[in-house]
Image (cartoon, rainbow, N blue to C red):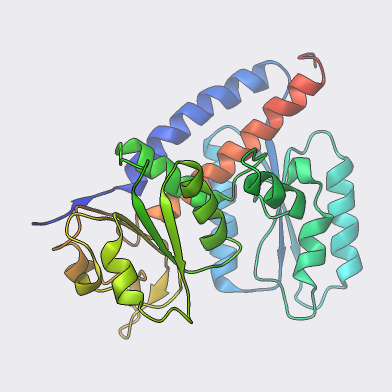
Length: 289
């Protein structure tokens, strides 16, 4: 058996087409969805991510603002920028690119973003809303995974879902979203005693731990849906995921590649969250601009 490939690029193109139509309709009513991105420092990967986000906005007919700061910028300057963006009614989403330089208190920075503009879904208020089952914004990577599962009609209710990784950005919100769809969810981490045993039970296996090719084919239940969130470099410098794709594809039923899997959907859901924020702003204004 060779797994079917879940093509994130193709799905992202379809979803972004729908988003562009909604963005054009909003713009025609005088509200152009706008995302502001703050980048601190010169991290090469962060610069690529920000560039892709800006390009995604522009391609979907949304406005983007980009604010670059050197790594040694005073935190107060960033807080002042966030406060100004919070107060600007023309800005619907604010994103602070992570990681921040070590002198920054990342939690304080993220909490400074107004919850109604927190399109990354990282603010404590939005995390709490997700936990209660009434999310304002869903973190973009888990939201993208859910969209991928939906696109393939993967059965969720009653399914055994195993997540490898417990980060606030992916693992924990992923667990909440799958639980909300009536999956039986297990979250594995560095202290998990029998990782292989847990993985082999999974109907849906989400790898989000940041270790190249650690999920091998012998850890996968035959026919399982395998979602690879990892982005790593292997020994030869080639981009790869947390899943050993070559061995996994011979066992899984459905699998995402790296690159071209979850990554494109992460940016797509950021655009979706920004659009939703703009639609809410227009509704709060009584539909008039």
